[in-house]
Length: 274
Image (cartoon, rainbow, N blue to C red; front, top):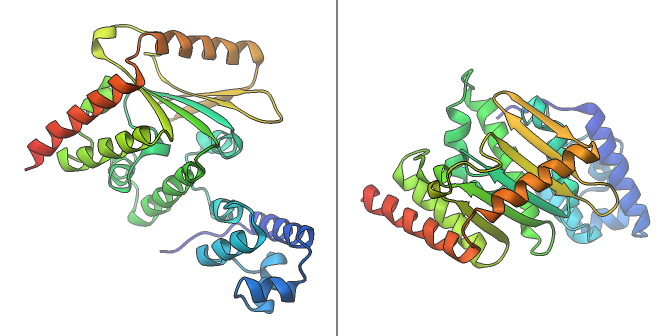
C-alpha cells in the first residue's frame, strides 16, 4: 500500500525520539542495541530522513518506556489520514484524560471493529479507492489504541438505539461489533449508555458530540454534521454541550441495562446471520 509521506512530521518525530533518548540517558549506540536497530537506521530516524516501521516504534516504546507514544505518533507521518474537519479533534483525542461521546447513527470510531469500520469507510461519498480507504482504516484502528491503557482516558459512550439497529455491513458484522462494545463495557474499559427509542426527543438528538477533558488545559467539545465538524473551546459553548450531554444521559438506560439491550440485539443479528 503506497503511503504519502509527511516530511515535516517525520522531522518532528525524529526530534521527539532524540529528546526522549537523551532524557533516558542513552547514546544512539546504546538505544540501537537495546531496541534491536542499527545505529545508522536510528540516526536517520532522529534526523527525519527515514520513517520508522510499526515494529521499530514498538521496540522504541518498550525500551524508552514511553507507553505507546511512538506507535501512536506514526499516523502523523502520513498524508491526511482523517477527514480535514476532524484533524483538530483527533489531536485533542490523543491528549484527553476523559472522553464522553454521543453518537446518533454509528458506533463511535474509537469502538469500531475492523469489519464495521471498513464498511463505513467503503460506503461514503465520494467513493474512496482501496488504498485511501485502507489508510483511513489503519488510522481509525490506531486511534482505538488509546483504550489499551485501562485507566486513561476514561471513556463514556452514549449511543442512540438507532446505532444498534442500523445493520452496517450486515448481521454478522453487526453481531461482532455489538459483542465488542459489550466486552469493553463488561471489563469496565468503557461505560456504555443507550438512549432507547422510547425516550423520544432528547437534548442531543440533532447530532454527534464528543466532550474531552485534559490534565493541563480547559475542556473542549467537538460537534459534527455532514462533511463538517468543529472543535469548540469557548467556555460558554463547551458548558452548554456538557449540560446537553448530562440531560440526554438522564434519559438513557443504566450501564447494566444498556449492556443487556446491546447483548440482546447482538443475539438477534447472530440468529439472522445463521
